[in-house]
Length: 118
Image (cartoon, one colour):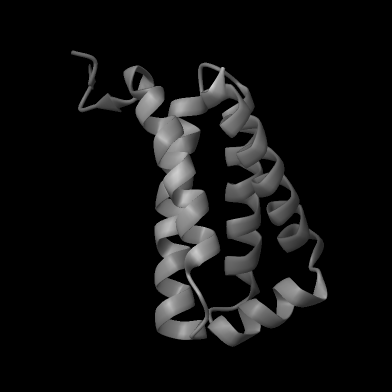
């Protein structure tokens, strides 16, 4: 039950964050301007966040979605520290929560065609 609550909370966070990136909110446009990679990256990150949010709510996809969001948050932590010079606390916290979900749903993760279930 606790993992379900974390999944819902993360889905809400990533859904809203991804929608803001896709909608081109002023704050997101400025942030991606500061990153300097172009607005294609803002759109890509927005799509990945919204897809991850939806995936977290679908039981069969929750583990894979959470693992993908962990990767996305690793990139966000590195970007915050190395490029933006801002605090990595928020993406680090969301990444840790996504890792908890991925671990809890680890039986869904497939490595080289084999389940990681023991």
